[in-house]
Image (cartoon, rainbow, N blue to C red; front, side, top):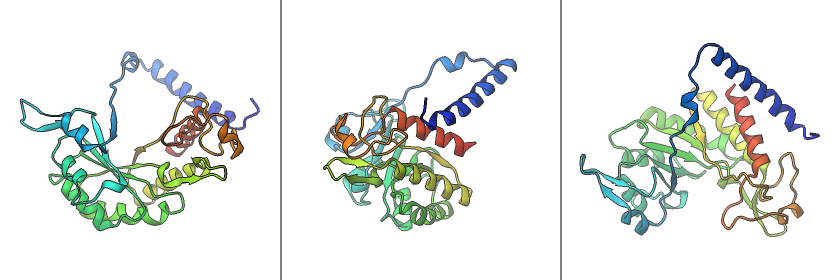
Amino acid sequence: MKNPAYKRYERTAKEIDRAIRFMDACGADFDGLRTVEFYVGHEALLLDYERALTRIDARSAKAYDTSAHFLWIGERTRHLDGAHVDFLSRVQNPIGVKLGPTTTGDDALRLSEKLNPEGVPGRLTFITRMGAGRIREVLPGLVERVSAEGGPVAWVTDPMHGNTITSQSGYKTRRFADVLDEVRGFFDVHRELGTVPGGLHMELTGDDVTEVLGGSEEIDDAGLALRYETLVDPRLNHQQSLELAFLVAEMLA
């Protein structure tokens, strides 16, 4: 219990407990909290796979990709005249697009027009992955341009991919401090512009892996080798995930 982060957890947990007891005293029905609607999503990268799982709804005659509820286009495949944008423009699923630090306001507007020409609320999400050092510089212009000239868009941050590095020992990793800083920058920008920070797009696990540097456990370069288990991207472990969750709770408060 020497970890200083635990005091922050305790404080926030007590606030949540007090709120729940207040709701209970007011007669709130908690039965609805015992079940959840579960949705899945993934990057629509392999188009042969996505096409094979696309179906035409008999009632509406519209196409739906049944491989997932939510699909997104990656930063490397978001070309306006590319196959990935064309394919997802033809299905009715809610969709997202990853936007990196080279994205211009024109890029974002054209993607919005192509993927959501009718301006359907909830149809399009922009998932920004700028990197901690660029988000405060690049994101304001995109949000202002899209808000002024584009259709409805939900804004989400991906603080993982823009902060990927290679450690001295050769591991693909991220610095937890950079992940936190990009999340803070995302909230800062939206707070200043009066827009809504809609969510976080994370890579995490409940296991005690050692794939991301830092955090209250102070994972260093040598520590990465202890339990580096991912085959693709380094993930926050359960402790780092909790630290991030409580940080976001504090910012929302």
